[in-house]
Image 1 (tube, rainbow, N blue to C red):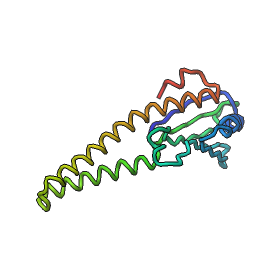
Image 2 (tube, helix red, strand yellow; image 1 turned 135 degrees about the horizontal axis):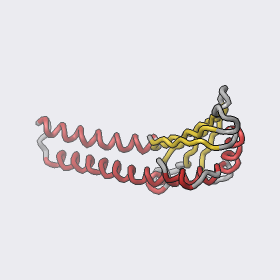
Image 3 (cartoon, rainbow, N blue to C red; image 1 turned 60 degrees about the horizontal axis):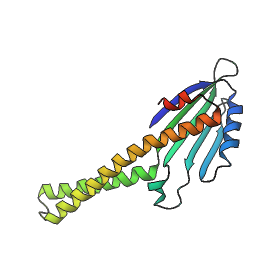
Length: 163
């Protein structure tokens, strides 16, 4: 999970309306906006995944954000966190656990079959490759969302490059 925090000179309600009006019209995005008791606004953005192969091609991040007031009038704190989609985490963990369990069975001597060793190694290698690939894609997707959010909020481009 990566976090991105900054302050912007605007009211949280105005920022929430600005985000809602900009992102509700975008096809393929799921956008939720909730108001808290403390005059803070929480929002969640993610791309809709309709088919399993969409995981490989679409941006699979879940963006959680919070807009809250500061002590200075007409200024807001913006706190945004970027999380990997749960389905990706589940697929990678299941793959790695399966591969490791097959290798443990072979090493413990319960099954001395060469094919079990090869299948376990292959499944574990696929899990590691998927993990590396998703980490690279994760960084690219974070930059895409930072650019999108900075354009919607009217933030300077220097904010979009800072993690």
